Image 1 (cartoon, rainbow, N blue to C red):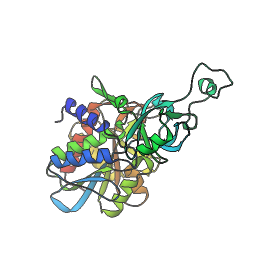
Image 2: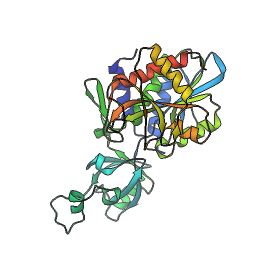
Image 3: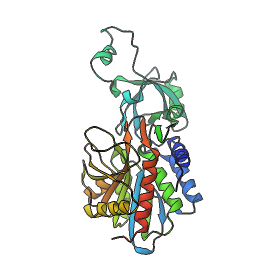
Image 4: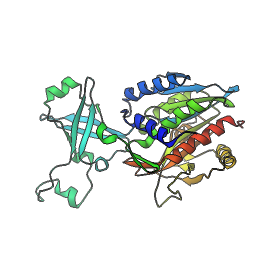
Length: 347
């Protein structure tokens, strides 16, 4: 239904639009244009969510499918006299995952590239960097961004405490590994690609369907909580990555994953049962798991009582919150399953 090449291209376009939590204007503009070009009703709400609506046969009921559009990164804490910029994590970002290299500071007036730096290697125990070689991992407190700009130049660019930092664009370009895509920020740009595919292919759902590219998920599912507080829903399904790790019974490949529980609580058994039944009718294998150290728009919204029924559908991913690798077939199968689910009589 959706060729792997086209899926790869769409995810690449999304990845190359910066969207650190709370500074998502670049991806917002792109999504508004793409949804509009597909001929669906689309708007932005006060929480910075981008929402597309697909009218259903029964307008008295509604479900939402969310995929967060924000990415992890860092936030500026301080700018030194020498133009070195100190940052702290924004979401689950670790400096050693990015490594030394180009990062982008999204100033109010200009984007400034700098080098995430950890210090020299040819040092003795007299230098604090020695401990990073032998004793402990690099923490944000030990790293800095070298810009070679003066404080005045950074101020003119609009670099200030609160400015967002993300991995540099030339380092974000996805690559293809046979049937896999490898890239930073597949969490959750690949899921947003699924929303775009649903907007293109889903024509007559059984009930109204809201496709929500949610804001600020990585810092507390803020966008999804706002949307679900203000929109009555019969169910919410979050699209996510699923970490590949020996502790979980999840295999790499093209089979999607359905979560039963995460760190915020259990998912709805009835809704999960409907998704499993749809997968069975499609002759599609679904993997089942519980996750720790994980949360989604769906589990957080259900925990706070905003929705009564929630589920999380995911695709297996290596190196989560790092340079992620996922099977394009698993991403496409998530879309195929959700399309079938939305077109089935909703219970």
